[in-house]
Length: 297
Image 1: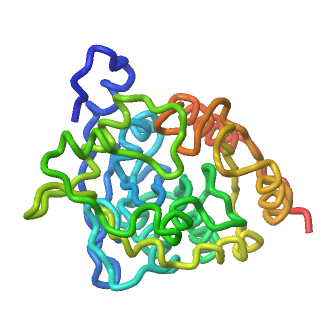
Image 2: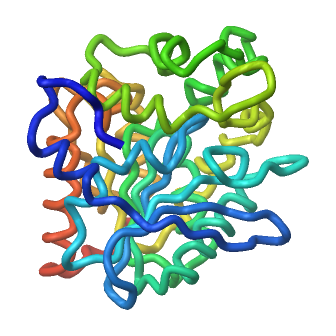
């Protein structure tokens, strides 16, 4: 869906012009939606969104990796166009990531998870050993309650999905948790348009407000069980402080690179998407041509 603006750069127009294929896979009776770019049977990438987000947060990022990879972006249950559950657990979300990888015929996929999606990525790597070729965790503070959960529990956001009279009103009110100083307007408009669903009273956000119930802190307990290659991307103005980065680095056996994305807020796909693309590309290229260091006990 193109954003009508003369200020939209050519790279963004090209990226979203590469329209993905919509696909669904059943996971224990729950229909899970995902986007797919490229042909099956190649090394795979699964992009996993954050809390209250959806697969199209990655639809201007994913096309940069098509060619050598089959690329997917999942709507976790309770998000986007996937079904809702009576309750949500990290186990369920891990199984959904694994099911998408299998359904899309991905070979040794690298999972890239942002914020809450980083928690899911860590849990998937720990609970499905041998499945992943690597895991890239983007500004996920895996030591503390993440921002969306904190806001939901405090009653500040997400308690009840707001309803708007028309899409333009909703898009104008689109905000992230936590907020950040910089958003690229053409990216946020694109993401916001894909965040809406029609209801009898008007338009509202697609996510289920109950998604913030799962105990995500358990991902911290799983860090030491991760055996695939891992990298941590910290955002300069994000949630992963140097102390949290050091904690995660230690728990991962002191072999995971920790890379700071300069001038990035917590949601780098919304303010510095090309920096994010470059960081992920560099990691993938290195992993294709290097041998992992052994973990430090």
